[in-house]
Length: 291
Image (cartoon, rainbow, N blue to C red; front, side, top):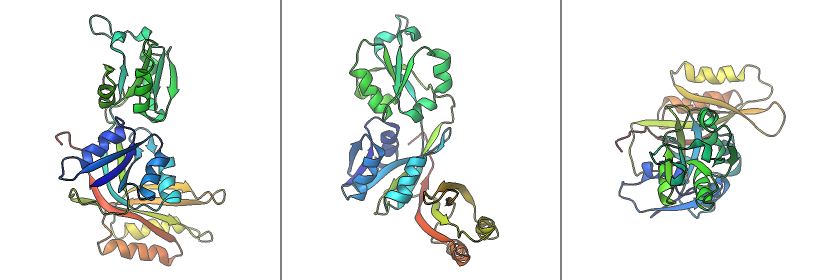
């Protein structure tokens, strides 16, 4: 049996996890947590095989807190990545709908959701429910549960269809995100290699810390990839938290570490005094609606 730590049942993370893992001949047990720290610690402490981590979103970009956990707090290699659509819906009591099935916006006095999900629906909220109080909670599924537990108060949540069904609430309006191309990139982290699915695409993620007394080090790092024609899909700087102005660089590379070119590029980078840490070399999966 494979055990997986994840944010709460009915969240986007839950749906994304089931997209990747279910239906591939394995017995999957899900361990749900309210806080991302508890998700990480569940696997770091050996209670679960993997953790499901949302790491990047089309609208909001990288999730810095989750990145910092991978880099600074736990030693959990990346075993897979995949992309899943983050489709948010307005969820509440069915009596918020009029007799003809239309949503009575004036009946809604408060909207609850995770801050990331809320940010993805900013224009919708401003246009249709500008009078409503907005409240951030730990997850979209928690927001749905709070609305369920407070009937008759005119509260609504932004969350997933599955969470509405689990809590016997109505989907008042579907797809309320401001952009149609709203996707979230997820990471599967843990000590065991991921073998349930095969992919033709592979990536390697590395962390590079520059030498302090080497002007032009970043240029030389990028040159090591450039002249080998190695494609970088992402490069991001994050503070080392040791000294103001000190940063490390996270780089995602569209290549497996098993190739000839990538290890030689890393060796060249290390030769100029950079520290290189491999965060994982893993299969990459694209979302297809048919799955």
